[in-house]
Amino acid sequence: MPTPIGNLEDITMRAIRVLRECDHIFAEDTRETRKLLVHLGIDKPMSSFHLNNEHAVVGKTVEYISTLNSAALVSDAGTPAISDPGYLLVRECIKAGVEVECLPGPTAFVPALVVSGIPCEEFHYIGFLPHKKGRETRFKSIAESDVTTVLYESPHRLLKTLEQIVKFIGPDRKVSISREISKKFEETVRGSAVEVLAHFQKHEPRGEFVVVISGKE
Image (cartoon, rainbow, N blue to C red; front, side):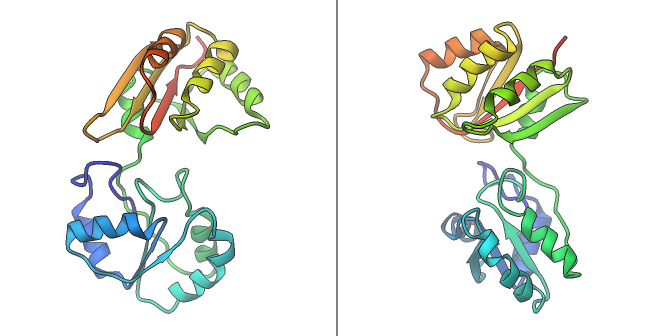
């Protein structure tokens, strides 16, 4: 189930009810989830389920879930399995005959795509780019795509990514970058690739970023 990506008000009444009624919560980071539960006045047993342990614990997790009336999987922010742990657990639950339900809710790339001003009737979401192997190939593929591309980027890699967008996709390609979505310092920077690069060369990248790149015209 989705959790707020910044503003704690961005959680549905249904999600709150599920957190209150479930028997157990599997969290990407129990410390972060505990903050949300305290805010909501909820106290539930929790276990860790994150990228570093999901392969090792997924089998036992499914077995345990099978003994419960219900359990909830949450990531630190947003919707599980969208560039966050969750896919393996969903797959194995389905194999084991455990009913899986996904609640609608916050996902960072959706508001970033909507406010970009770049066509969004069709788009390609790729999550995080590979750090090394296949990175240049991915940029060249984006350069040839005629649909909008959406990706996530961390602050310490943003400048490198923008430089490579200018190099491999083109300095004039339209780009929109949103950061800290739904938080106090939410910001969206729009323009050509070279203009957006110049902005972040002058302003140190901070926060988590969603990058939207227009398709080839």
